[in-house]
Image 1 (cartoon, rainbow, N blue to C red):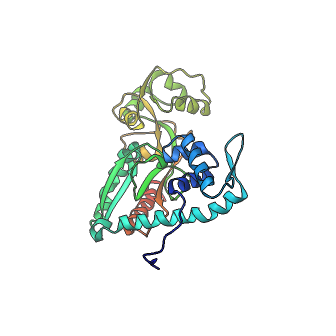
Image 2: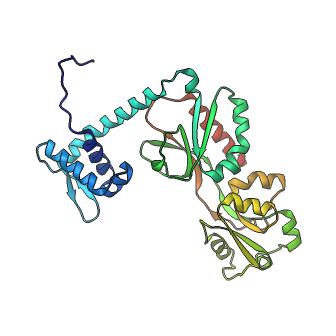
Image 3: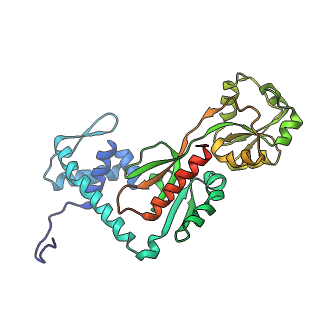
Length: 308
């Protein structure tokens, strides 16, 4: 129903409502401030402004760690939370109305190493199956709630829970040593103790990975012949392919190289658990046929990679 021209809504300050809803959802002014990209003090002032506008009822109880809703605050959240969700959904629908051609654009954000080692080598298959969908792939390691733009599909580790997103499993993985067949032959890697003769390839962001695996294999005190540390998994994997040494390979990201024989697993009986990869899609807004097709394709590719 369209309101009459003379109808004037009595609305509280909307920034104050946003601050209140985020603080209520997180149970913390600090986490609400991080979500809204403001300071803790700004959230506190917005909540105080809303309380004053409403006539003075306290909306939160201040605790040692965080905040808790009062009865008045709980009642307000029950109304304004769904209202903000409806506004968000309406905005998404409005942005999505760009005609049929724009609806066939699929905006994907994925981790850089996953994109390079797993997604890109398979993306041609998706293009062959869905030639009318234009995939726009952006890489980032930022958390979902830290992304500056909206995406139709975001691929990250998981399983995790993000407000406003639904998760879909893509592929699971474990981590174990990998090297080129030439290195395995040249160094005679018949047992874990033989790693004392080789160069171990480390990833800077996971400095304990090799030590954890050696401990799991019963050789926690082993000292390798040499060590090389690289910035990213994709660099350590490429270094292993090139014969520089032995890397810790995430199974999902080296499956193609293992299948082709470019890499081998000298000790397949010992591996470490790792987070799986999940596709996260926005919960609000209309169904996106391009997203649905991409999710179905991801699931099929993940099943193939897992040997199912």
